[in-house]
Length: 318
Length: 314
Ligand SMILES: Nc1ncnc2c1ncn2[C@@H]1O[C@H](COP(=O)(O)OP(=O)(O)O)[C@@H](O)[C@H]1O
Ligand SMILES: [Mg+2]
Image (tube, chains in turn blue, red):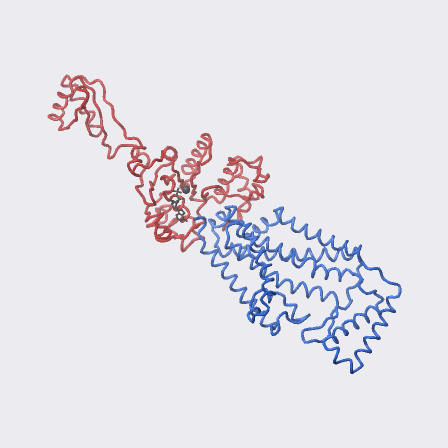
């Protein structure tokens, strides 16, 4: 089994394409950093005074009873603003200033999220179909190894690649962030409203790792979708194209079908588990345990299907 | 039966059905150890399909394949440990070097392969100079050599090559033939090759299974195929008086000769070799002048055409 994994890794990392993907990722992180650095809004000389005035206003609004009804849900947002301001004043950090940690978070959430998914889908979509289109599947299946082990080694190597790509992204974004914006900001609070409307906070480091954690769940599912598609098609380019397409169509579908009650059963509505911690669920009535259960069911079905197809497959009787 | 006496490969009612059609239809025969064994049949006969079932690439619809007595359907891993194969084309990772391809193959086995063994097969196929180059820079001939090195890497007791001479020039075919014969003779390897070309099989194989439309026509030693059926041959004699000769042979040897219609000096007899000698002696002793005696050996081609029902193969 370790030998098979070594083979899969050799095929992955001895291939130029893999390193082009990594390179693109690194380039985008650097480019985003440089752009953010050059477009940083200048810090006004009296930012502290502005914040103090803003705080006083917010405090007034929060304490004056007759305004409360009108404020309604905005109350929480005001509290978030207040807490953020208080940190910035006491730590002498001008608002909206980038730090290594805020940059890494920015990268994770905006620049990289979709790209990471697409890159992982490219590798996973190719990993089985590529052997079929190259004919090399015959090398794998005519050796004293079970089809189970061969498929498992491929699945694991794809997962490892996702982890490697995530780790590289994280490391490079922290490095670039530190070079461009300085190493501070690790203990800056990320203030947020949780699903039940409470205002909570955690530090930026915790927030960054939480985001990567949630992203791993979604990547795991992405890998599994693309992997399944890869076992179905004999052409690796078709498998890659369909994998990426299905990711986009799936996400769009969730939004388009929001009015239907069964929308929440779509895999893509459940991919982002962060919704239960940070902003409240996408669709009313969804819960964390509902999403986890749905994900597990999808996972088991997709893995089962991949294995079934691969094990039954007649090689080249077209 | 002890393991020693078991044939290398046994096919028992091996069948592949696609829908209603049987593209391989109840094939049963044994492939003895240490021989070069050929699957011979026209294109589309089912040779590749049979090989695919033997090596586990496609499911068996009915029947069994035994490798040294091990059922490939029940004991796939053990059975495959004995086999090296190239099905249709040598398959290689073009973005890897030749060496990396061999390393990949080495890791696919059940037992670790010594790096020395990799060197050995590289030398065997004469790729030392280019082994660390990417396969995409290799010529077709080099790819075929590397494919053979892959198949031989694990020292299989059974080597299976599907249409191995496709795309080789005459010198390459000759080299391959010598190589395969050497493997069988000196190393006791069982070599199975398929081909639609009779002339190649004749030179390469000890024995062939003739397959047509998915069915086994017969398994025969090449030597027997070339010889006439049961040693009986047709001999045409040219003499000074054919009708006298016919009468004489009928009276003395009970041999019924046929007179040639357009030529009063020719008659032909159907007999074994000894009877030909006897006939000549009788004729000469009785003062009939014998100018010529020629035996029409049936060619392998004739036998083959008769067997497969006149499909063009040669
Ligand atoms: N998927 C398939 N469906 C139907 N017939 C097929 C399929 N694959 C191959 N065949 C047929 O099976 C027969 C045997 O093919 P093959 O084993 O490749 O022959 P050979 O190797 O002897 O030339 C051919 O007539 C071919 O057309
Ligand atoms: Mg063929």
